Each structure stands twice: as structure tokens, then as C-alpha cells.
Length: 152
Image (tube, rainbow, N blue to C red; front, top):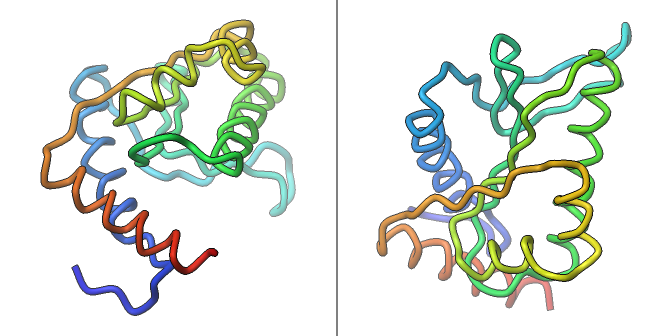
């Protein structure tokens, strides 16, 4: 994969697509990838989850990250959870909310003793880990190294 910029996230986006297909297979339901879901009657109030099914009341986010998560990633997960909770309130139903990770460290952190982990438990958000190939893991790690050098 050729990247024009050091901060490019093509590898993570590719991994998210692979993981999406695996989640779809695990759940064995039709899911929409990256839909734009309008919550109110305006063009500004919407969410854009990584996967969604109105029919089965499922919404989820995929995090293609390997290794110890950074604070910004925790904030992104918290923000995504808040959006999923808003979906529940606006639609007046309870969705199955899923955070999908591909790394054991991320899974442990989201299931651990942090405020974020406790919020995940209290708001009944599932943490699902999907195994990916070693080759895909290496692509993600290499992209993270490149991005880390850019963001220093």
C-alpha cells in the first residue's frame, strides 16, 4: 500500500473493512458499513458508525489499533459510545452496542479497571475481539509507527 502522507490511515481503514466482514459473519446478520444515520430532521445531527442494522438494532465501532492505546484513542471510544447512547434515546429503543478491537491489549484495557471500562460495563456496551492475520497486524503496526513519527 503506497501512502502519500505519513499520517495516512489507509492500513487501518483496510483493516476495519476486513474486521467488518468478520463481524458480519460472526453476528450472521446483514450490516451496513459506515452508514450516515440522521438523528433529527436536519443535516447536522447524525452519527457515522462503522456498522449498523436497524432491523436487528445493532450499532458498532471498530478500532484497528495494535498495542497500548493512547489517551486520544480512549476519548474517541468514549465519544463513539456517547453517540451510540444518543441513538438509543433518539430512536426510543435499545441497540446492541459493540466496540470491536483486534488486539488483546485493547480488549484488556476496555475490560479493566478504568473509568472508560466501567462506563462500557454500566452502559452494556459489548467489547468484541476479532483476530486478524499476522500480515494485517504488521501493516497496522507499521502505519502506527509512521503516524507516531509524524505526530511527535
